[in-house]
Length: 101
Image (cartoon, rainbow, N blue to C red; front, side, top):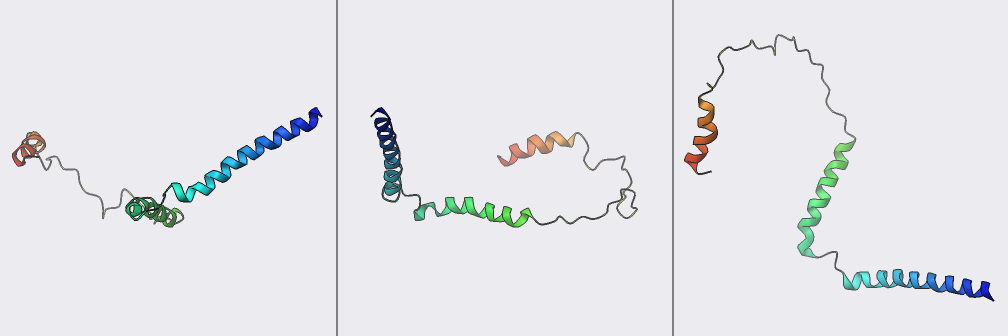
């Protein structure tokens, strides 16, 4: 009798668990709206990068030989830089202040 009672209780627990799952699935479509036209931008921000990632995942990169001593790309060292050091604070501080950035 005790064995039958334990099995009956186990069956009731399974039914309660399955009942919760079934009620969740039944109410999924009626209670929650996972899709609405106002979510189109959100879905696009999710799906478009995924499609780009999938399309680029298996592409091979363009590999070229590179020689750092190649004379066609070798430029001599310049002693005089393009911008003098005193102009750096002007560009980084005064120009943004002048333009109100």
